Image (cartoon, rainbow, N blue to C red; front, side, top):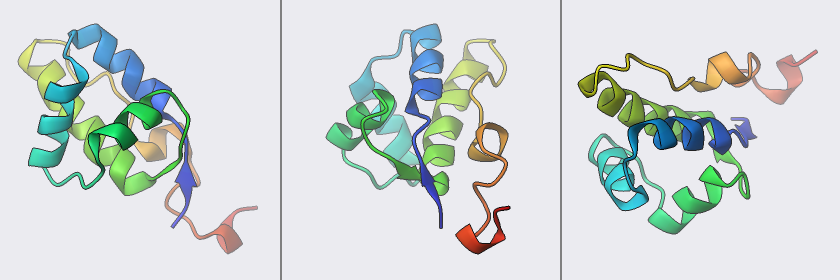
Length: 93
């Protein structure tokens, strides 16, 4: 499983919603996210890497909130940010 740092894409979506980090983290954990709030803060600042599945869980939580606000789904999922995110390292050219 590849890890990458694309937290800034989540940070941009978060800024659009004006949702604060604790409320975002609650939404993320509610749908299956397993990272601590401090890890979320670090990821949003591109200080750590996360597995694609964790990025996607956070992106989905944020996209659900954006949809509630009428913004559609502006936050990219891992495969949209990194086309190799679902591949093993040996599969990457």
